[in-house]
Length: 96
Image (cartoon, rainbow, N blue to C red):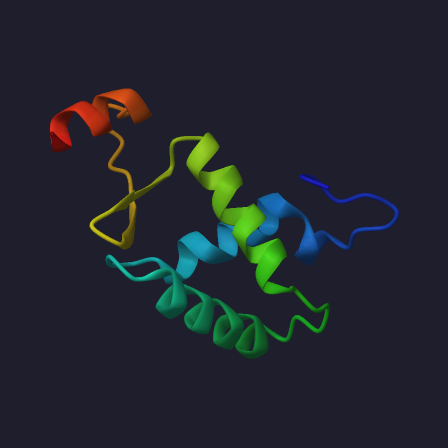
């Protein structure tokens, strides 16, 4: 699932979907904007395997788990390599 398997083509593996998401996430975007750009980029690249919104969200989950993206102020952003990873309880306490 995360990597290509006999049942999941390389362009639908979650690592590939995550890479495609990062490709379009060149500035802070809402989830809807990112989904729209992601679908347009897949068409432009000629990827014909369907990717549902649920699969797209799993790709976001993988990127978040790897510490590559952040969700802040309703926007998805790439996490800078030099910024510390914010734990969920740290983020909650800083909002209080």
